[in-house]
Length: 119
Image (cartoon, rainbow, N blue to C red; front, side):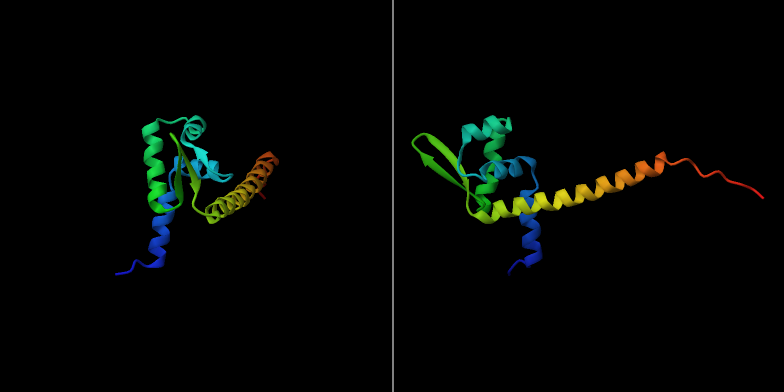
């Protein structure tokens, strides 16, 4: 039986739902990166990075490249980089909206209170 598209999408986003995986994908946007450089940039235990890379590799989002004793990782396609750029644009818009609301709230807080006048 085939998985409905909405369920496949949910599983895809769930797979992306880990900060280390997102950071790895960000670092790979400019091309292949050796594992040692990923470890230096992310600052986690090698075993933890290995687990997260395995998840990304099984999903087909990244590929590993072996050159001698050096293992590097790269994005499997440009669509992932575009997805990350889209996420950045969406977050920028959401945060800008929140900043506007915050400014409005602060402006309201700064206004003198309206005194209740009884007649």
